[in-house]
Amino acid sequence: MNASAKNTDELRATALAMVAKGKGILAADESSGTIEKRFKSIGVESSEANRRAYRDMLFTTRGLGQHVSGVILYDETLRQSGHDGTPFPELLKRNGMIPGIKVDTGAKDLALCPGETVTEGLDGLAKRCAEYYKLGARFAKWRAVISIGRDIPSTTCIAANAHALARYAAICQANGLVPIVEPEVLMDGDHTIERCEEVTEWTLNAVYEALYINRVTLEHTVLKPSMVISGKDCARQAGIDEVAERTVRVLKRCVPSAVAGIAFLSGGQSDELATEHLNAMNRDCGPLPWPLTFSYGRALQHAALTTWKGQSGNLPAAQAALLHRSRMNGLAATGQYRADLEKRAA
Ligand code: 13P
Image (cartoon, rainbow, N blue to C red; front, side):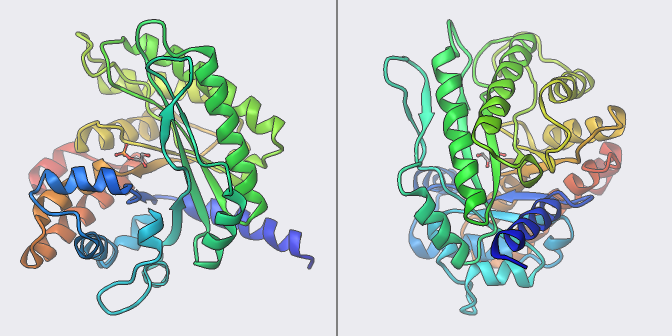
């Protein structure tokens, strides 16, 4: 078998494993600034040792691999080791999870477009991807951010972000990493759910056109979209069924069935709502051409973080909280979550 055929087989296997039935992805790739913010909320200093201890707590949760297929890491974490000296990528693999890596370098002001950003990180990306592969990563993530507001998003912003996402995805595939393509339409603002739907549709259409132009193999990608929801400050907050229906409608319109799977971000939704929305889509909106699952950061980690509080004595309870949310979302990924049962169990 020649090298490129092997590469193709591995990319396909990785993409399918990421969205395996009843499993989703844990986003634990908070940048230094973001993790500092999270730690501040529980009164913990963001030192290298504390970041390592926190991620060690998450990754050594027994049974996590039954519900979590892969974990997105930050550069620092990919190079760190657990308390027993096992490098995190190896530790994850041993616990049945695929190591992934965030490769973008953040959303930066988009020139001449006030209030909008473009995600950076393309310079030197091929070299970084090659190194990340050697360190054990098998998939990557790049997050584009689209804000809704007065006169935004602009065509400029959508085009710049779609182009960067597609260039990133091509570079990943050329280096053996499955790209998670993440165009996040932010829920910040008082816009209606209708406006969110319109912007999400516009964004996804632009992203898939750019992926095509950049020769990306869709079968070797996972889409990580935001759900179609009401703006956080909108007076009318759409219910669970409406969110599920509108989200699936847009995805069906824009996402080719060749895509390996769709793993949502939680984007600031409450833990329970993120689970309920995913469940409703899988329970009521099928049949669908792709698996719909989760790639949550906050909605998986929030309970564990606030239980942990930086104290090793809280470790078992924090791990139990992470396992619980992972299990609930695993059930939602097959439409089998029951809110009433969760409430009784709590
Ligand atoms: P949230 O689920 O907290 O939105 O994080 C997912 C993520 O990876 C954002 O890039």
